[in-house]
Image (cartoon, rainbow, N blue to C red; front, side):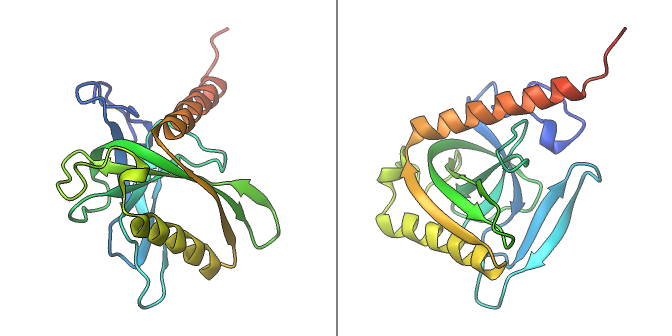
Length: 191
């Protein structure tokens, strides 16, 4: 990383050396416990425990210095050989995006896309360069996980489409711009 940040959520989105996205892992693969990074406390907070038999299929986290439509950093699922602990920064390459609409219990809907990336150190998926390179069953299982995860909370997760790297990069650029706009608005003004 080229810039030292006070909080994980403020790290650079892209590693200058590798040109990979930096992903901060919140919830490890195989975990029933959903963690979320709280930038105010600079700590990982337990959000909930999934029902017996339901676990995160891959490491789940966020891309720092981004702001998605839901007000949080951009979500990303990272495919790699082994799970890593919460707080790990995993250099990864974007391969695509699952675009989705999430409807809350109160009926309010918002876009809540899930970027998909491959860890730079992953051997199992090292030949996967785009979402369509993944076996269809993997993508389908990821979609089903998010549908069931949201259903468990009384929400609806409707997959609108799966797209490749170009659309994923556009989502990343949009979220980086939104983050910069928010930071600029929050910055103290000198008179």
